[in-house]
Image (cartoon, rainbow, N blue to C red; front, side, top):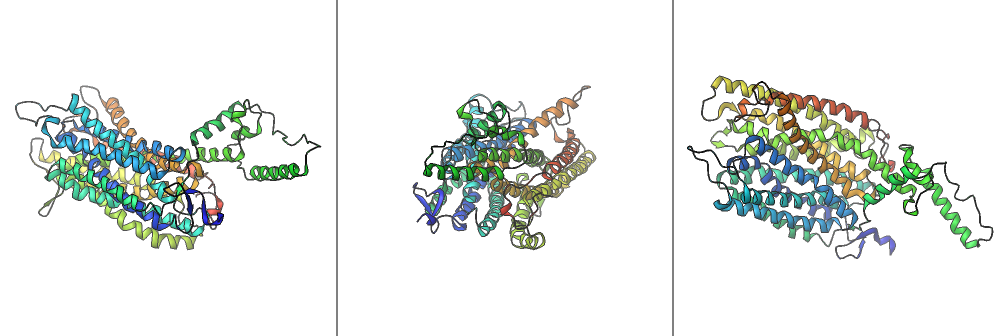
Length: 575
């Protein structure tokens, strides 16, 4: 009977999960469908939000851009909270349901505000300056935004991990299926984004923002019954308590334990012990010896948490706890190396949209909303994700003998290379756009005589970078993290995006202050984008991205994968 159960997992009612009934790709497929709906609801608001804030809340271009990056940064950073709660106290199943309700409430607030003129500033008039949203109107706006961000964070921190939990860690076939799940998870992200930046953005620009927020509200509400429809198939990992407590305990023990070499725990032998006790002690000694033999040679100073003399019984640690903390520490340099890419991605929601607003967005008789520009990388991702999983990966498996075809760290590295190229392209395109603006003249009305397809190039390169990096991150953090910390570790992928958006806001402020002087504003200040020196900012981003790539290669080349059994013939180093 024990062999028929999934050890450490329960069904949605808290009963033991069964191998014949729970888990597998069918269960994970509900997650993929839900992700399409959830990401559409989120991005339908976020991708065009800078236009809403500028046109209806009358924020300045720089404040609108900062508000969007802060909102998206908060949403992704709160994924850490969702992942932590799923690992420590709840299940990923419950966290999703709670978070979806929170996002629903936040979108309701935004939809109501967009519907009633009394909750928005009055329209701009030619004889008076525009009135920026303030007081209760601003409070309603930010309440809706950050309630939505709290819900989005919980979903991001639980949904991907919930899907990945449906696969057996100890089966090569299941691990390959899990890799396919992560590829199609990114495909689902792109599918939701495609609906958001085409249908919903068009509705927002042509029918009104109340309808756009309304569609997002309905989408996240409908995702709940879809998610619940898979309840009978899900296996849910039993929470194992706070992983942060284990991390803190190991660090505290390693720092405070008295040194003096390994303690000879078995030096004193009780000559009167019973034969039964001797057998039990022998088994414990054998288990302890196996744990010591399996410990890594890296970060040896953490071994003091076991080898030293603990100051208090509460600081007693096992070798397994020490090895788990070592894994977490080794993941951090990889995590920090992806933040700069996220900073580059933040530009797609802010300055790139503002660039497109000044350009000719007509395609034949159709006028394309600037916020729909992400359609280019989205369509590319949806085309390349199945090709990657069903063609490239099998070929790479035969060539490298690697279970995943291309290692997770190689995928992330390729994405970082593309980010450097993308920022160089963005700078070159902005130079061309400003040259056209200067030829036309400052007082000209209407869009510039240059097609918005030029801006599409930076979307294409950054979208491709996101495909390789995000899918690689999600699977890398989930598969390498200790079993008790996987939701939290997977959330690092979203936290990287959050810190990238925050870094973008900081860079804008720092660059403006550093370049201000002599009666002139900074590179990114002024009442018109044509007065900005956006091309210089993009070149700066290109240089920083190149330096970040060098930093990543340093850490990735030294990383050793934790579980060698997951590879067919893979060398332990990533490159």
